[in-house]
Image (tube, rainbow, N blue to C red; front, side, top):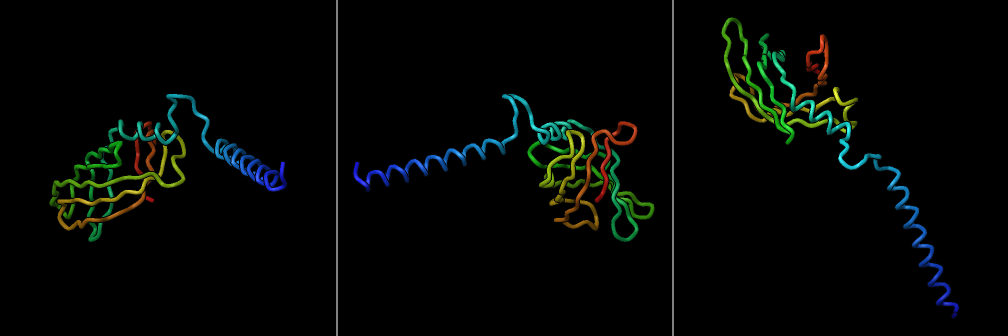
Length: 151
């Protein structure tokens, strides 16, 4: 073999070795799950979307409160809430909707995660879209009931 051919062969072998090491490193980073096994995030999403959330209240300006009578989280990252706006003695029924997304760190476990909430539609008097906030959802909170905690 000529010197150029040997050098070319050595470079090609070195490149293949680097690709092999890279592939091994990438393989180590992937979570080890068997076929059909869900990730913790998928299990949390399943739990979130199958749980009925009722009576979640948030304080709003002017001393009022917005109480979501029900909130429906959907697997496609959307949510809707039937709410009651409490201002003084006059309650107003209204609805809000938007999107939800797990924080980058992912769920704590299959029953607890922090979510970023965006409300992009509302017919509640005095509320304006868009609005966003962070919550922690515990599927089995106090007394086994689901709870939402403002962050």
